[in-house]
Length: 475
Image 1 (cartoon, rainbow, N blue to C red):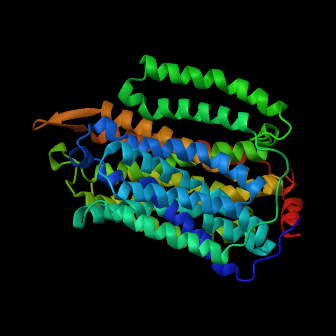
Image 2 (cartoon, rainbow, N blue to C red):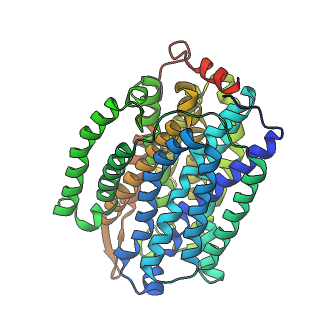
Image 3 (cartoon, one colour):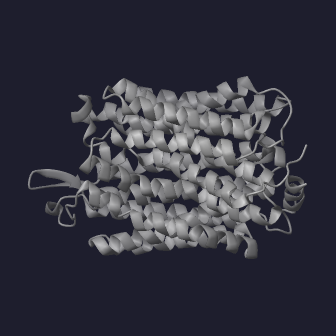
C-alpha cells in the first residue's frame, strides 16, 4: 500500500521539525544545572550524573526499537507514543526534587530522541520525491539545533527562575507538538509485515545497556574496575549471540545483511565519528569559558554566558540546513558529507589557536557547528538512498543510535582527559589548557576519520539502488 502526498507539505515538515527541536532539547537540558543539583537534591555529584546517563541509555535503547515498531505498526502512532513518554517524564521532573523520581523522568525524556528517525521515515513516505531530500536535511539537523538551544535556555531558567520551570515548559511544548501531529501529520500506510522480534529487542537492549553504561560510568567506577570490565565483557559476549539470532530470524529487529552493505556500513561509521566530533564542541565550550582566571587561560564566565556561547552555533545550524539540502540535491549527499567532515576538522584547527578569548571561542564553536549541521543533514539522505522503503525508520533509528554512541564515547573521553590533565593554582585544581587542546585534537581526528569513511561510501554509479527506493516511496 502506498501513501498519497500530504496536502500541506510545508506545515507537515514544520510540524515534524519543531518536534525534532523539542525532543533534542531534552538531551542537554540539565547540563548547566548539574553543578547545582547536589545542593538542590541532597545527592552526591556521582549520583546526580545519572540524570544524564539515564537519558543516554533510554534514548539509545528506544531509538532502534521504536523505529522498527514504526515500520511495522505505524510511524505516526509511534510519534505520539514517543511524545507521550516525553511529556510524562517532563511532568515527573517538574513536580519533584527527589533524585530517584528525577532519574525516572529523565529516562522517559530520553526515549524522545526516537522522534527524529520516525519523522524522517514518515517524510519519505508522504512527501513528493522532489521535496524529500530538503525535508530530511531539516529534520536531521534538528538534533543539533535543539541541543544547541537547550543549554542557553536552561542556563537562563536556572539564573532567573525556579529550575522546575524548564520542565513545565517542556510539558507545554510536548503537548503542543502532539496536537500538531494529530492535526497535520497523516499516518503512513507503508508497513513491513511479520512479528516484532522480541528476543532481538531484549538482546539489543542488554548489549546497549551494558556497553553504554560501562562507557558512561567508567570514569567514575574506574576503567579497570570489576563492574566496568564486567559490563564490557557482558556486552562482548552477548553481541555475537544476538548477531547470530538476527541472521537466522525471519523478520529480524536489525537486518545485519542490509547494514553490512558498504553504503550503510560506512555511513553509520561516519555518523558515530561525527557524533563524537560534534559533542566535544558542546562539552568543551561550556566548561572552557567557566574556568577561573587563576588557571591562566580561563575566562571565569557564568553558566549563563557559557550557555549563550553556543547560541550562534544553534542559529548557524538552522540557517545551514536548507543549504545542505541544496548541496545534496546538486552534488549528492556523499559529497555534502565529505564537505561537512572537512569543515568539522577545520573548525577544530581554528579552536586550537583561539581558546583564550571569548569572541574567538564562539567563532570556533560556530565553525564546528556549521560542519555538524551539514553532516547531520546529509547522513539520513545517504541512509534513505541505501535501504528499502519498508525499513527506513529502523535504518535511520540505527543511524541516530550511532550518533548517540559517538556522543557517549566523546563524553567519556572528554571527562577522562579533563580529569587527568590538571594543574593546581591558588589552591584550585582544574584542567590545563593543554587538556582542552588535546580534546580538540581528538575531535578533529574523529572528523578526519569520518571523512575517510565518507570517501569509502560507494558513489552513485556503484550504489545505484537509491532511485528505486525513492520511486517506491513516491508511488
